[in-house]
Length: 433
Image (cartoon, rainbow, N blue to C red; front, side, top):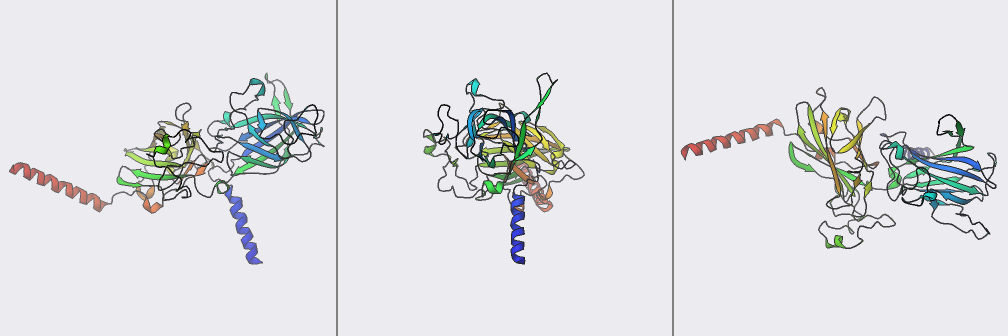
């Protein structure tokens, strides 16, 4: 019994911690339902999907929201979104509902839909920005008219079993909970109104649930060492090794080869690491009071363009970032006084889209950091990041013993002596000649 108890506690710790992100401890997606008015057989509600994650966004093909009705509710109409299936509505005569399924699945509308189908913060193809990147774009909304439901706060039953794909697996949603009604201000800000009833659903992300392998890796290089530390072999698993494509393959000239598949299966360039994305950190220059780093992100997936990409990095010297040249930068301080994490992301309309694998499938920038002379040293891997996240997923770092190292004094003396010897021999040769 004691062994069984310990076993259960162990698994509880694993699964409870799998959805906890130490760099974004309060990050989640909150789905808020506001009942705005009652109808003859139900209500009209505004549903908002708010992304409160600092550096994890929802990219193409966007979010998919699902739930189970508590009774026999139907959806009469929707604005700003639609269900993927109508279901069996054969029992209705005259007005036919938009959806009669017990478990509806809702998706956002695409950009460019007619104006009468649009709603506030809708119609972005399900793309929702990260809160730290652009708070104004970190929300998606739609309106739903529900029938065969209650018409008072006491008779309405909350939906159950919420699911969120963003766009793949990884999110776990809790139960709906009634909260104080949302308050609204009129346009002139002189009158306050409130929803008739409000409930929230909180969804948290776990990389452990999303995939069994990392989706990115990190490589290192420096000006003081000729060795390049590559990504670990099979860092992202080698299941796709048989289906990978070489960079010079004629298959890549075929029409439609870059079209995404319905199951989002990748078409990767053949590499030793087999990762869709690689982040390269190069220590470029060492000044007296500053040092310069070059960051390059390369996409090896021929079927994926990364919209609104983000790169979160944990490094002790990010508290002294002086200038970022080609990316936008924002410090991330989840614990207040500890400022060792930053988020890099693309500049809008310039490099916020990381293209599919190929000549254009990379973005890069340089970062200038001021030295803290009391603690600064290039020794023992100090120049390299502790953690790297691309689009919210942690990347695999090389093992520490493989990092580029500083030449020791013996090597420096040996090189200096060799150069001196060559200089003397050259001078002797010139004098004799």
